[in-house]
Image (cartoon, rainbow, N blue to C red; front, side, top):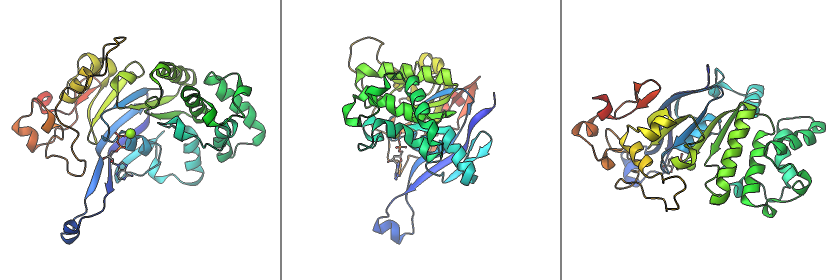
Length: 326
Ligand SMILES: Nc1ncnc2c1ncn2[C@@H]1O[C@H](COP(=O)(O)OP(=O)(O)O)[C@@H](O)[C@H]1O
Ligand SMILES: [Mg+2]
């Protein structure tokens, strides 16, 4: 099926304040949040983007929604480059592409009633006011907050985290979008309500035929949700494969570590730390060659010299590792 979203060589650098030395030497240091990312998302597909904090997941999500612009590279939605969108074209895109915020406690204005919060995107999109009530009611039904009257006049602080995240989802769905980016949609919620919210997102996705991106630092949370998973490390995709393959036969040493840290389902054990040494390197000064080499148990001389390209190693399975390219 044709790609709904297409990214090509997307780079995003954030300039940082220069030190006196850097100023004198004429250097322009930058955080390399994304360093050449290319992939397609087929219409109706759901993909997960996983990786430790700081590896560029949120930046990638914001770029796909045109909430920020790439330093270089191109992003297209339904065949149209986002960079060129303005006016009516941009408004059309904003109606079709929505973000589910990470933290439902921050996502809603505390002074707006729940009704106003969910109706606000309709207002912004210039939808006739006469349609608002019906549309809000339909969005509430989709997220199973059917007993509307109990919620509409309430304020965010009067709702639980799970209810709030349903409201946040209703707000994202009220314009009947085609594309949804959910950035850590359950990480701030109590463990007891997470599974329900994830199941709801899956149901909504299926019934509305949405194309969806789920961002998470935790592979365990998204492994049952998406057919395909992209693993990121320090601004790059290091592995891209069907989620089954990622979980059963991870090929990149970093993915292997992520999979090893996923607890056995239902076992009541604490999360094990990643079985690799150290932390994600500073994105201002990534190591030469492969950015994972400092932490990799298999690092070879070549890994310090050449960054391994992301290559297809089997049908629909891409890996960026010299071990796989040998
Ligand atoms: N607005 C910004 N200004 C400067 N640096 C930023 C900005 N947003 C993100 N970064 C940096 O970019 C890198 C990737 O961040 P982010 O995309 O938030 O990662 P993740 O969502 O995977 O935790 C981090 O090093 C972060 O500090
Ligand atoms: Mg993030």
